[in-house]
Length: 305
Image (tube, rainbow, N blue to C red; front, side, top):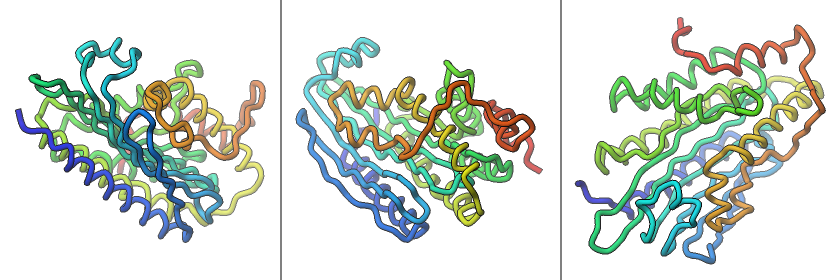
């Protein structure tokens, strides 16, 4: 078994946070505010948040590294092999909520987990991915997003993109609404079968490709004019985003259950949101077309010309 290099993973994640923040600041013209924090049970992180920017209404790019002598019962119940082990969990997680409804919300994270016990091999894995949540549908944007994701996976085998694209579609799905959160991307977890070096290389490929996928879409849509109608639809769709994060997202639940920093965990929630009872888009509208055409999983690259 290849040796687990925790220091190298942490260095990469800190550099990734710096790189993504620099690129987003260049797009927006405003700076992130950094908030360093410590976790009572061990570890801490640095939360970087931008609010009321020119482009970004609210966004955060977090790094965290938490550790402890034992995991909460909720974690060991699902993974009994982790009982009695100390653990470290580290990662970069981000959510960007743009002001302009024509610019999609995006989410990404890459993470590493290791649990150790004297005299035994460590239990470790990588996870992560990224996904896109538009409010208005542009097929060329979605195709480009998925093409970058596929390119990031390609060096690791032709089966990787279809597998992790499907996993993303299944994971970011609001079961209580029978509706996708967005148009998908990549999702992977428990990655360790290929050994540490190969698994770490794949996580880096995903992390490094995020801004390659997102920045061109932002540049293309950020100056499109919009009005109250578009903002209202954006707020309605943001409600679905909140529902997923608070009901289904495993990262949110793990963070809260393991004593993580609540303010950083809930950074992912949008600044303005609305729920209207049994609200539906107007029949025949572009909003209705978006809901019917874009919120069902599909093979976006199959339609690429």
